[in-house]
Length: 65
Image (cartoon, rainbow, N blue to C red; front, side, top):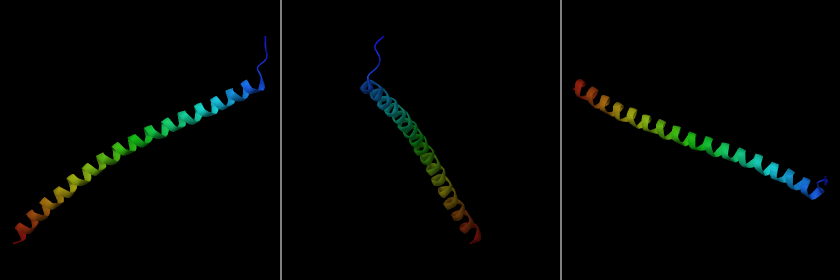
């Protein structure tokens, strides 16, 4: 059996490192997308609460007149 050359061994190490880096990058992208969705959802909830507060304020002002 032929032994692997140093060049082949180094190429395997480089490929392994690139694969690990790529996997980590994909995890970060997925986490970023999830965070973006959650932020949009929270933003919608805040807008809803804001509208509800405005309506309540108007009702309270009318009641106090």
